Length: 103
Picture 1 (cartoon, helix red, strand yellow):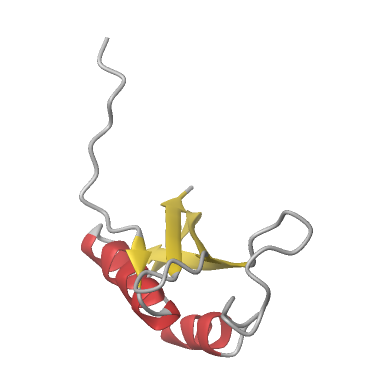
Picture 2 (picture 1 turned 30 degrees about the vertical axis):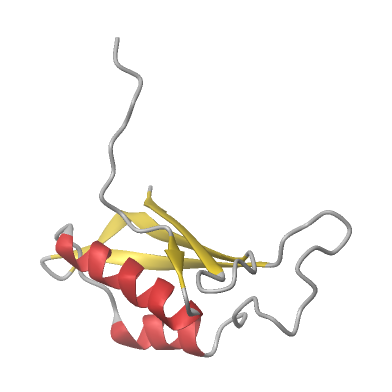
C-alpha cells in the first residue's frame, strides 16, 4: 500500500492575500462556484489576517485565521464547504502557511 499522497497545491505564501487568492483559484478549478458577496464578507471583512503585528508564538500557539465558504455547483448550494486556514509562521519570504480543504 502506497501511503504517499502527492499534491500540487502550494503551501507557503509571502502574503495573506496571495494565500487566500490561491485557495479561491483552487476552489474554482475544482468545479465549484462561490458567492462573491460571501467571499468578500468572510475574507475581506471577516476575522482578519494573522500577521507580523501579532506575536509569532503566543503561549505555544501560532496565530491563525479560519474561514468557511459555502460552495455551489450549477447555482445550487452544496452540502460541502471550503475550509481555509491561514497561519502566520514568520518564515521571512514565506510568512503565511495555507491549509484548505473541502468537506
